[in-house]
Amino acid sequence: MNHQSGIRSLKRQLPEGELTTDPAFCKRYSGDKWFAVAEPEAVALPGGVRSVQKILTVASRHKIPVTARGAGYGYVGGCVPSKGGIVISFERMNRIREINADDFVAVVEPGVITATLQTEVEKFGRFYPPDPASRADCSIGGNIATNAGGPRCLKYGVTREYVLGLEVVLADGTAVRMGSRTHKNKTGFGLTKLFVGSEGMLGVVTEATLKLLPLPPFRVALSVGFDSMPAALRTIKGIFAAGFLPCALELADEFTLRAAQKRTGSDLLSGCRAHIIVELDGQRESVRSELKQLESAIQNFQPVFVQRALGGSQCEKIWQLRREFSYALRDTGLTKLNEDIVVPRGKLQELFDFTVGLEKRYGFPVACFGHAGDGNIHVNIMLDPTVAGAKKKSEKTLDALFRKILQLGGVITGEHGIGLAKKPWWKVAASKQLRALHQTIKSALDPDGILNPGKFLN
Image (cartoon, rainbow, N blue to C red; front, top):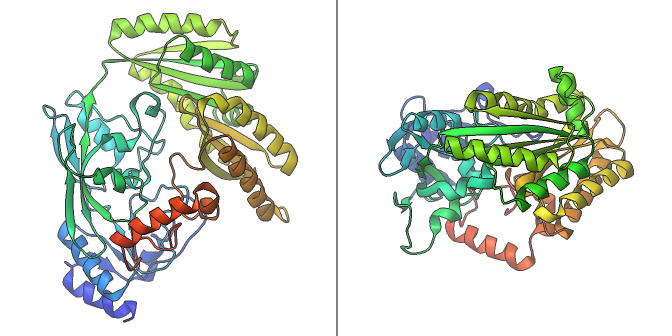
């Protein structure tokens, strides 16, 4: 059976406006923030789970590829429909179904924007901690597909820790509810967690029950500049050695700071070769007391400057600098290859020593910033695509980077997933036995391989 007959059949079954084959419209759903694009044959905009079931039932019968899409803010081509077929966009399934302050849960559809959820739960005095940098644009469904993180993951953990239950439509159109709204549950296998981070290859999430926490009443932050990266890394070790567990602990290197200084015009960064942001949260008096102790501990490492922020509005001013980093690197005119690698915390100095050598060896500037508290550093290879042979050389640079990360006991992705961008290194990052186990699970849940095909499992 060809795809077109199945798509025509599906269009007759769905409500008006929920499926289009218009090429101009479909083109809008051909890529994400990475470089790969592939146009789907149709785009579905379901309004509810019944429509999703119909889509997958027909797709399974006609062997049509299906790629689920959140907001399209991924960095590895994860939602690129590389085999064509149907893209299911969840932009219309964007309802917050429930916020229950007593149960500490929120029930949401996959198209809910992360920042929108956070704003709404805070009105109830509750807190949804996962905070990817694109939280104003990315969706909960996409966060679940990639197990998204963010700065606050140091203290609070990643998306997986907040998914209590899911409604998932399987490849054959069967809808399954798993998990619960309780904060503890040992009823059968932990299947809910299996779907978190599965990159849309095992099923399509249509509803999520999320754990909430009490909203910390007070926040403080420090912005700290250093004259060298080793000084910043020693300070980070010192913060943990002093017994602090910050809400977030971010780090940036000199290349990133120069770009940010040019973009923002900030004189504060002059003379800095490394920079950290440390945030604490909790009760007002205890956090103020901790801040004094933290400042004292940091001063022992002779920083260039220490800037403090008290309260949410002041903290956000400090974080605004951090949010400019990625845009500042784009302002350089170079193409940014953003690699979200993770190393054990004790290997950060080895990582930065290696990236300096990587820059010298291959001739590409390397910009590093990210979540130093948990070892998740965004290593950005900055290349000029107009230079002959740049693409081929960049692949060698990435290969050297990923192999070194694995040698250090790290992983090639901590937040973005594998998608298309890291597919060439899947066999390097995972053993033969582990790859076979992945394939066994994939084959059991999606025997025809229709869900997000073309990625690392097929």
